[in-house]
Length: 355
Image (cartoon, rainbow, N blue to C red; front, side, top):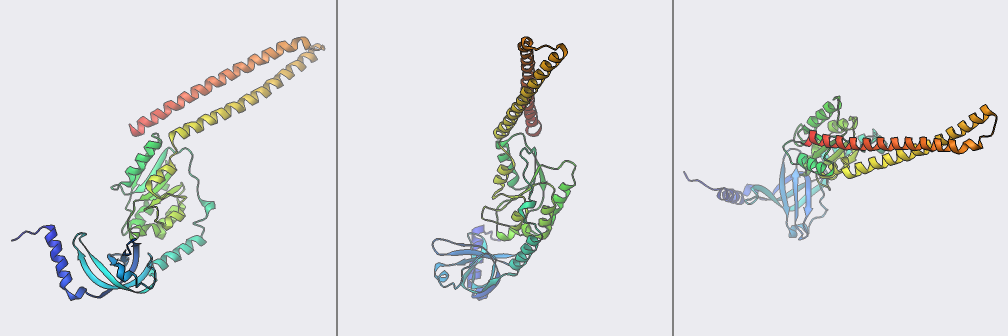
């Protein structure tokens, strides 16, 4: 029995399809997906029917005769020859005519869901939860086998190594993915120690691969989640309904980590400014209280002796000044010890979570 290599098998299959009249001048109907026109004039896209898709190609000559601009989400009937691309290992429809371009049922369903959610206030800015300034725990809903979780953790560690992460493994594409992610989010909401921020992430892909992020069950779970949610689905140009429902949208998983996790230098700077502001307020209050004590002592001495206390005023002023200086010294020492303790805690956090 003869053994064939992959190239030979691909060539045999391509030749068989090329010779068969069955695949000549056929009409295929579906939803346009991933439409891209190259600067040379050729157009690439896919036809999608909700479960399967086929790659399509329109040459420069046939593209010139299109009567309507092709856009992703439209439904169309494409006429052409089906060929087998031996290099890519898949069939490709070489389109010479595009007929009956219109709104697809899938797009109509999504538009109807959009209108319903908008009327229920799912997209209102007023209901969006702010991100915490100092998050210590980041939850990530994504596939554990993908590169997304590694990108988020790597970016987060570069910004602040004291933050810990929890991966909530879930399917992010295919049948049942929306239900799976919704169940994971619901389980997170029931935990005693929830993350400070939840990132729902998936890498880029075809538009139909992002379909779970437009499904009602997942959108309602995100809306009901008690903690802030960042959506990071697809590439920068991809937009899904979860981007509108979530509290913040990131164009990529890497940007989601940047939005959720402030840099360590910024955190320490905020702490330092807080301590300085608190110190200034305490010193101002201390000065006012010292003046009040000084006035009270002078009044009491004058009342008890019945004589002016001009001679004792300088002595009382010196006493109050010494008291204020001692209190200020104690405050400064306390803040210094607090700062050192915070640095020790930060180092301890780093050892526990990333040691």
